[in-house]
Figure 1 (cartoon, one colour):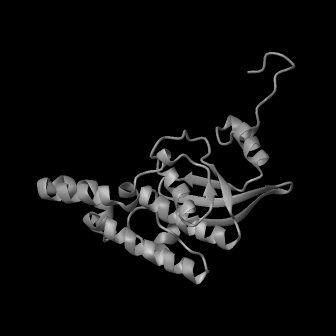
Figure 2 (tube, helix red, strand yellow; figure 1 turned 90 degrees about the vertical axis):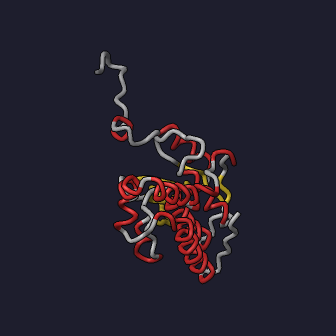
Figure 3 (cartoon, rainbow, N blue to C red; figure 1 turned 180 degrees about the vertical axis):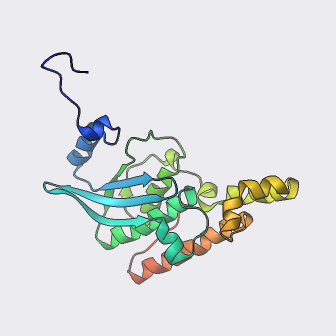
Length: 206
C-alpha cells in the first residue's frame, strides 16, 4: 500500500508478475532481436521479436502444435525434445528472414542448467543463428533426442508393465510407443531439415 505521495505504483504487468521491465530494458539496449520462449500447460511457443518505437514486431515464430499438425509429432508438446524441434522450426524461418543473432528471453523463469528452454537456443545455433548461452546450460544430446526416455521406458516395460502404462499413458494414447521416442524424434527432425532445405536454409546438427 502507498504510504506517502512519493510512492510509485508499479506497472500493471510488473504487478501481475508477467514482465521484468529492467530485463526488457537491457534487451532493447542490446539492439538484438529477442528469442522469446514461453511455455503453457501443454505447448511451447517460440518467437523472434524485434522491438520498435511502435511496439514489438514478430519476425518469425513456431508453435509446438505445428509439430503435430504438419510433421506428425506424437511425443508431447512441451518436453525437451518438443522444445528443440519447435525451436528448430522457428530458427529455420528466422534464418530465412535474415536473422543472424538473437538474445534469449525466458521471461520470469530462472535459468537452470540443462533446462529444456536452452534446447531452443541449441536449435538456433544449429541453424547458424548466434545465441549467447553458455554451453554447459544446454541439455545433453541424449535428453534432446529422447534417448534417455526411450531407455527408461524400455527398462520399465520389462520390470513393471503397470507402471510403464501409467507413466507413459499419454504417449500410448497418441499411438507412440515411448521406447521408440528417439527414433520418432529423428524422423520428425529429418522432416524439418527437409522443410529447411526447401527454403534454402542449411541445418548443421552438432
